[in-house]
Image (tube, rainbow, N blue to C red; front, side):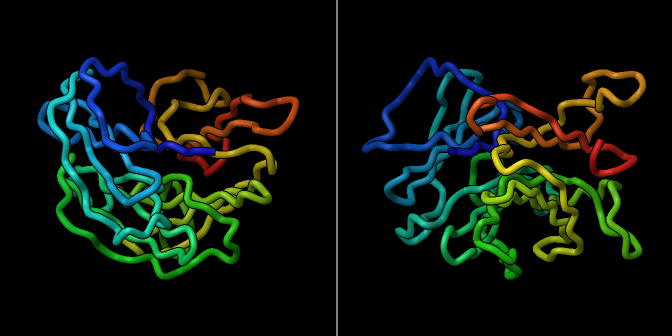
Length: 237
């Protein structure tokens, strides 16, 4: 299953050739230019070419090429978030085999520098990064849902379905929060969906907290969606 870290779709009016296929549509949330319009991130499967299309609504403006990863196709773009707190979305990459994880700092569609490395690894290679967002913080030895404007990393075990939130301080893990999920349910998006139906009043107004969207890819319930709401009162509604 190909995971995306975006929540936008486009009908491109000026569709241009990207060269030899196949290309992956990776995301469309690098919208930090003064126009406030989402741009589109592409990466070629068979090589390490990565481009950002700067967009004016559904019209292509220009392309920006991002750095090569040395021809190593093992590097995958796994998430985006503002890792250096400059108000711009950055790109998180991870190597499928070695587990090497680092950040491309971005200024909108323009690459500025590579930074950091998460040296700590999960216990099993079946754990994959499925998103990044500010889920909470680690205060006085306690994991809390108090937001600290620092991106945390969302993992899922592809074998068991279990979800883990790594609360981060830069590239360092400070705490882990575990959430249960059936083995056939996979994280497909992280987005602020709204308040939990269990809260009063029930609504879909955005509450500034990332929620976790899952889909059941098992037989019988394929495509069924569920939402794990993140709230101020706790990590799970």
